Image 1 (cartoon, one colour):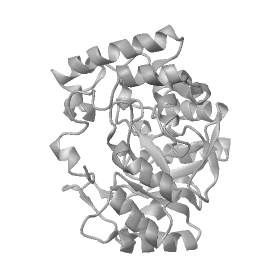
Image 2: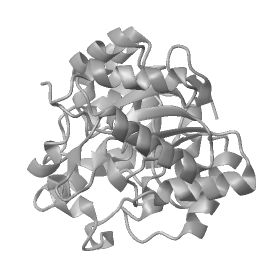
Image 3: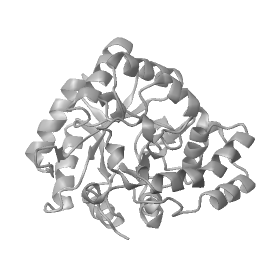
Length: 327
């Protein structure tokens, strides 16, 4: 596994991290034993950067990681998040009291005294981001976090935050079928020395081997509310992806590995965090950092999957209200 720097002054981590949202059952039923085997496989393959959150299963994902650390005691760099209050109603809270309390809860579940990276999971628009970064800078000074991050924010918010204290990482959805960060956010991160961390880099299973199907989704799976996973958009997207899957097969590459390799190819500051709860799925894409594209490969991928090829939005209207839009 190749390595990349997490932020301008942060540690080196695996070029590909592991998203741990599925440990909490967001993408179908999960059991902790399977999740622990996935973590074992991740460490064996050289992955040492884990991404979780306090709201993933009301702390379940963090608890699984904490259990793993007690038994394996691996040297892992952990990122977690706070700021979402699930309610009802669902709201955001970036106040000092809330962030401190939620961080303390996360540290307890993880069984650690410090996390490498602590994100604001969503920005509370009514609260100036400069005030929020002041709180995060205090947590850094106290040794509870190595650095802070922002999730689903605009380039303008990043610049405002970075002016108060350097931002280690920004996390947003980014993949071959979700390309908005190319319109300024990836570039702003590069200019500031901030890592860009694409989540859902495999398009929530669409770039899997094999791809997720509508029949695979349980009735409570939140992907059922996403326009791209509804007809007629779903069938149109599957038809658009078929030539790309053939391209990968012709070269003997896994589709998931190519999708991640494409992200790594967009810049040395990108660290994608594909999510899975199984060791088998992880094995399909973990070698992505070793794929080297030729200029012809890049041109063919751009021809097959140009920016904007996907049918339907990545979020429905309710989900879209949680992210900062800037284009």
